[in-house]
Length: 191
Image (cartoon, rainbow, N blue to C red; front, side, top):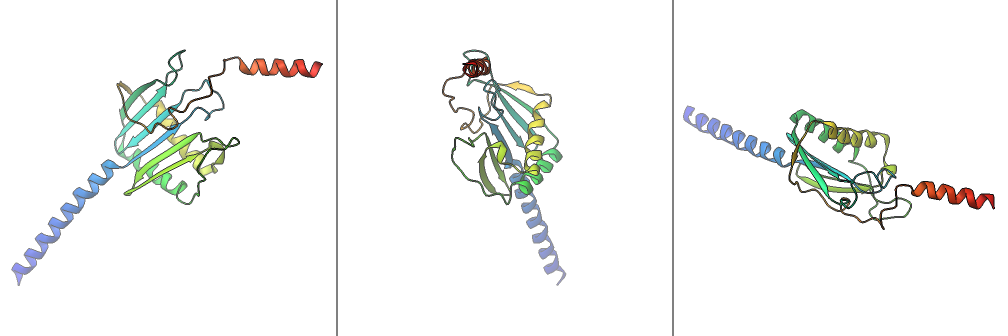
């Protein structure tokens, strides 16, 4: 009888060890990625960015805004505390769990943000305009964006979702375009 319990105990311990290894592997594959396109700040001169958070790493890309380098990126990486990832994971799952998203492009609400995540063995891609967010969702997005302030080391390349990072603007407007519009408006009102 004791031998039966010992065998059962060994089977339970081995099962728990296998489950523990699988759970740790799944955590390592989890990630949250946020990309911001050309319309996110209402300023065409603002660089497009991407942030990817993994269990203990953060990847970041920023568009170069020098003339003739639009659409080219600098890439960075850094180590992060796994607690940071777990906190953001919890907040993303809570803030975006019950949101119904309308996909597609509208002139009134162009897609400015893309949030991709693979969490708890579920993959989700959410595209939205920043003005469509609730307050708690804005807070989560801002927490993710604040991670770009961490000290990072440069790297050659990291793959990000490219939809918003490669979208084309119908020709980049000149830096002084708003001055021209104001002048035109003032001129037309004077007549």
